[in-house]
Amino acid sequence: MPTREETFYYGAGPALMPTDVLETAAKALLNYKDTGLGIAEHSHRSELASNILKEAKEDLINYLDIPDDYDVLFMQGGGTGEFSATLYNLLGVWVTRKRASIATQLDKSPSDDAVIAGLRTAIEEELKFDYIITGSWSKKAYEEAARLLGPEHVNPVTDGRHYNAGKFGKIPDESTWKLSKNPAMVYYCDNETVDGVEFTGFPKALLPNDSGEGPIVVADMSSNILSRRIPVKNFSVIFFGAQKNLGTPGITGVIIRKSLLAPQTSQPEPALLRKLGLPIPPIILEYETIAKNNSLYNTLSIFDVFVAGQVLKKLLATYPDKIDGQEKVAKEKADEIYEALDSYPDAFRVVPDKSARSRMNICFRVIKDGDVDAAEKKFLKEAAGFNLSGLKGHRSVGGIRVSNYNSITKEAAKKIAQYIHRFGSATAP
Image (cartoon, rainbow, N blue to C red; front, side, top):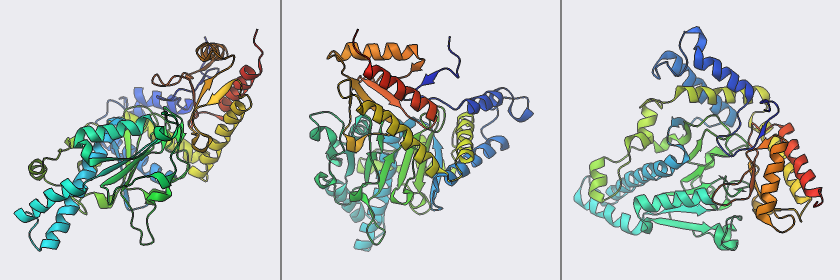
C-alpha cells in the first residue's frame, strides 16, 4: 500500500488536507495543550475554545483583508444550509427596511394597519430574489428559494444552460441578464464545483454605483475561498463550507456586512412574518442570533474551527503577501493542467468554455478512441497505478474532475499534468 507521501489525491471535497495540519490536529485531539483532554472534549464555552475561535476569525480577516464593517460568523449546515439562511435573513432585512420606508412615507407608526397593508402590497408587487444560475449549485440555491418563498418571488436572472446546448459550461454575457428592480438580494456561485465553471471576477452588472450604492450581493465561495483576492466591499454576504480550502467538514464560514445585523437592521418579529404569510427562519440559521452569541449560540465544533485556524496560520506563514501569493500559485497549477489537456484535443475535451474555466475544479471528458466510457475507465484505472486518486467526476455529470485546491502542491499539479501527457500521447495497443 502506498504511504501518504506517495499518494496524490484530487477529490472535490472533503479535500486533501496539509499533512502538518493533520499531525497538529491529531495531537490536539488526544491532549490539547497538556490539559489531559482532547480539543473535542473541552467545552465550546471554555477560555481555550474562545481563544481558538478568536484567533481563527482574526487570521481569516487578516488573510483576506476583510474590512472593519464586516463580521465573521462560524455556522453549521454547509453551503446547502446557507441557501436557506441567506434567503431567510435577507428577506427579514427587506421586510424591516420596506416597513420603515412605508411608515415614513405615510407618517405613521410601523405597527399601524395602513403600514402593514402597504407592506402586503409591496410583497405582492415588489419582492424579488435574483439568482444567477451557472451550474449545479446555483441551480440548487434557486430551487431552495422557490421552495421556501414561492416561485413568484424568485427571478432566474440567467441560466447558463440556455447558452450552451442545454448543459452548464458558460457564464452568459451580462448584457443578457434580466435583473429585478431593487431585488432583496442577488445570488451567484463564484465557482461551480460540479461543472468546473468559475467567474473570472466580480460581475460588472452588480458593481456599486458612484455613490457606493448597489444591490445586496450574496456569493457562495465554498470551493474557491482563500484562493484569490476578493473585493469584499462589493458583497453583502459571502459564505463557504470549510471542506475544500479551509479545513474539515463541520463548519461554514459567513462574512457579512454589519449593517445587515442588529442594531443597524434588526430582523422582524415572528408575529409580523406570520401575519404576512412569510417564512420564519429557524433560530440556528438567523445571522443576528449567531452574531450576538459570537458563533456560540449552540455547540459549535471547536475542533473544526481549530483545524481551519491551523490552515490559516500555515497560509499566513507560507505567503508573506497573503492571498496574493496563493492566488499566483493557484493560477500556475491550473495553467499547467489545462495546458496538458489542450495539448491533446483528440484525447481530452475540457467541459466548460475557455472563458469560464475553473482554477479549482478542472472538469473534462476522455474522448480518446471514440468510446468515452471505456476511455474514462481506462484513464482512472491507469491513474490509480500511479497513486493518483479522487479523479472521478460528480455522479450527476460523470467525466473526470481534477480538484486543484490550495492543498494541492505544485508537485501534485505537475504529477497529474505529466500523467495527462502520458495518457494523451500513448498510442492504442
